[in-house]
Length: 158
Image (cartoon, rainbow, N blue to C red):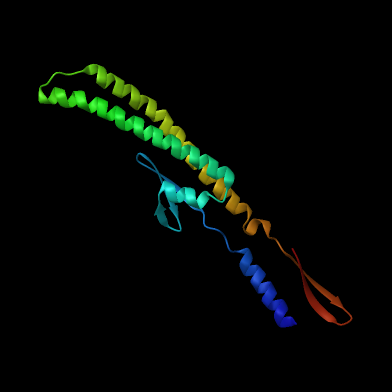
């Protein structure tokens, strides 16, 4: 009986220290990079990891959509800026209206990209918070030494 009790106490103690992995966020030039288990992961991998948390998953889906929209607007805007500049460098006729429209698209893409990064980071924070609440912080067993006419014992309440 003592062996089973000792094994149970050791197992519960070890299980209480087991944590799910946290997603780390690091700001880099042009955005953020995300690591999981010390490995760099893409936004798609990030979404599949977060999928178990529905609130965080909704945020990351919105963030990914905004990121795609921002990328398309930035790409088209950059092309519309680059075409007249290429013509100017090549000695051709320059259409500055296209460059102005391109600049407008790039300016619109910047806040959308910023919003996307905020939503994705909120999703990561929400996911990490849910991981922390299910870990050791909620498992706090109480140990008591008890005695009766038959001897001493150890009681654990959780």
